[in-house]
Length: 342
Ligand code: F6P
Image (cartoon, rainbow, N blue to C red; front, side, top):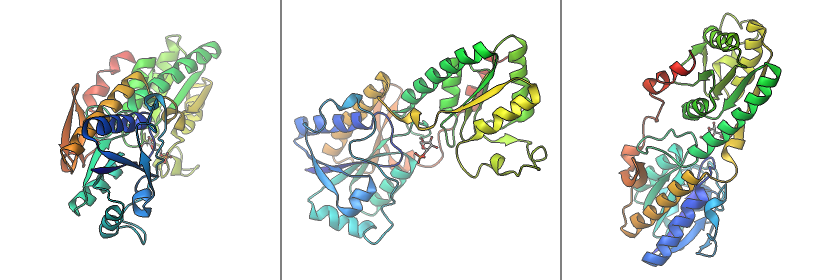
């Protein structure tokens, strides 16, 4: 049996640990031959493969990024795309199936290819932790640790200057990174996409923290949307608040907090630092276990499914169940943290 492995979508600490887990177990236990597919679906479409042996995956569990490269290519687009072309390419290289490691978009493409008769199985990946049908995705814990460390650092400089510090973290559609890092770092305000807030509510919490003698710390997800800003900002244009682009909401909030409270305020956008570098111990273990179970799944030809974390176990979930609504932060999880800000 010959299996191709690809990583697709935004990279994420732990991708290499999955690849290592798959290759070590697949070669040793099942005598599977592996090829690496370069740059996600782009490599499938172009037939860009290379041998992947135990040698290539040596020592990889601690290495960030992905040795396979990644892209956001859609396998159904372009002159060489589409299920029939891909089938022919895989057949020409004697490849029996694909392990696709990726997020919502990658798994949606994997599901479509599977429905079109191509052997594909999935491994969920997202630092945002926004995939349903898996309790945690690797990369999330690392991102939370990086964001927490950054906010601990913002606290000491904020305290020294009696400033309000605003930290913008990743989270395109969901606020898991902001919620967890905000709780861990003791933020005074947590702004997430699931809970729109007005600038008045944010300023009120900042002011209360300041009145208690604290240097206020605000954490905001990049996908957060302010409510009630239309009139206040009609003179500046509304684009910043309607959020046609990602990133920058922290820099929108900071001057407004300063203007309304008189507290000197600085914004820091953590950006891709949250996705770089070595995975945490938790993510190395989770990613490795997913890789080991993915090797079992391909050996059993359990296509059309993804491996997933349920509680502390790794299980298999059909693609159809894994796709659909995102794993958003439930309101009760946000509200249980509210007592911390009082
Ligand atoms: O989905 C993961 C993620 O890191 C989001 O948090 C972020 O909005 C996005 O990817 C950034 O994508 P890119 O690396 O293409 O800028």
